Image 1 (cartoon, rainbow, N blue to C red):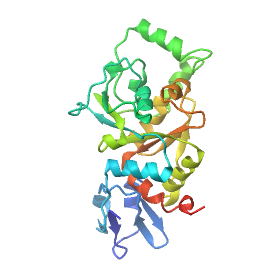
Image 2: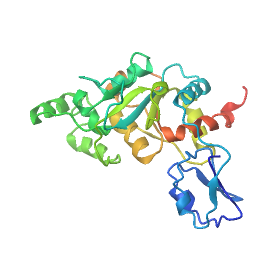
Image 3: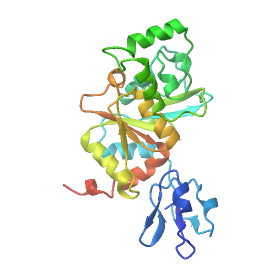
Image 4: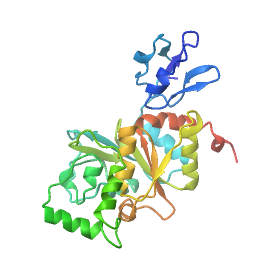
Length: 288
């Protein structure tokens, strides 16, 4: 484990468990212990009143290429895993997406291996989805915005009956503390230390993932629907550090190039090493 708790010094106060963003510290019969979901951040150490938390025997390996290969192998994924990395400056060698483009369409092309990493900004977007993924909104006049909303979002045949329902759906999701300049979107194997990853799965793969996530922690993985794919897939994993899954929305599924039987999983990157490790420990790892 990246960190370990000395049971002889632990006072079982639960401070470490309550502060851990990964939910990696759990209470067992013998006291509190650190699970594979630990990301080696060390946030819990200053909150331990008895100094019971120390370095474990191993470190978390955030090797994006190895994690990409492990997920594909263990889950039998047929397509690429997309990765997103928020940044205020484009990385050297990564082209700036000029647009007009949808962020979800870029991800769909990543799944299919049709595009390398790009720096996506609000200036490149052709919808309001950039604001929903934390990179601000492109500039448009009020009339242009109203026309787009009426054509794509509001009314019979679209996502919401009126603007009231659209606003209510937006209020459900956590608020970004800032608008980032943009984000790197590319294949996991090509994006080092991303913030989140997302990829399409089918039923059995979904069961494998949720079981591995819950295995050591007891944390339940939530699914969301009824709103735009951008709001559902990015805000919660990035801001609340917990994975989600969704069927997405009508246009989002089209741009993501999803098959009828597929849904989207979005995971905070810091949880991926623990997920990979636990995939070998659950009922799905047994020979069939």
